[in-house]
Image 1 (spheres, rainbow, N blue to C red):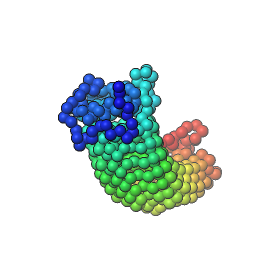
Image 2 (cartoon, rainbow, N blue to C red):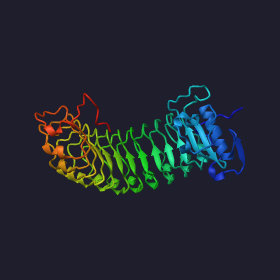
Image 3 (cartoon, rainbow, N blue to C red):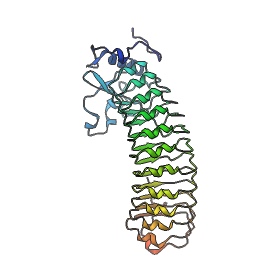
Image 4 (cartoon, rainbow, N blue to C red):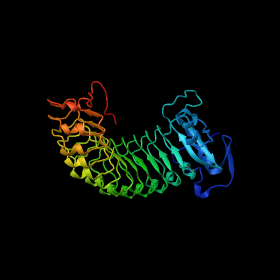
Length: 377
């Protein structure tokens, strides 16, 4: 008779008591503790996992076209190194592909200590076991579209993690131990209920992409200015009412999205971002834009749609790299002739502004919202 798996099961040995004996699982020999973990997981999802043998990136087609992308694993030398339990909508509707979503992870998940990639998307997980912190070799962890309200402190043990994706959960806080992930390059905590970010985020010295969009944040920690490699911040859809000046210390920043926040202004220091290529402040409450925006010599796209801006910044003519300028739904009454001198400008949207005269030289650059959508991000 198959042993029933429970959330508090203690039946599996932990990695500290790992057996050297190998047992076949789906035609592949695994070390006993890891085989036990796979069997427990199989019982929970009600289907066996499909093995795959090539590196994920060796496939020419999308991995979503492979059955193992939904319920599969990769093992090397008896150790499970990649695992998929992905309930995302897939093209395979046969009974042998359909499986039960996870409501919890067994304690034995901590036996898979050689895991490097773990994908648990679109399940029903509301918490993670403490033993989850045993997965110290993980480099990629995807937990998007679950029901997680918190992450265990032990997640900070994953010091080699490079990508952490927990978007579309119910997180109200992040553990301070997240600052231990010194190799983290990409952090996505968008679409949660976060109202604060721990100061320890400033320890993530290799972070390149930070996505904190659509939370309940009112401010960002000052330590965010300690991230020397940061290139992209997506903070759209929060409750930030004052521009976090500390961001201007991230001089390698290339993309900044503050759309959907109740901002009244941008600071003069915005001009201190020499590598910024994209700046979005759509659906804010901006009354003006500082002239220092003209210092953004690398800026290619500037989106300021749906604000209260009445005057063009004087030094906008200095933005020699600007290709797209979107100012739909503002309060502009005039357009400076100098815009026609921007050599790279290809797209200009000015719909729904009380403008009476547009310089003739600009007519070829203006695109109207009703005819096209030139300002997509």
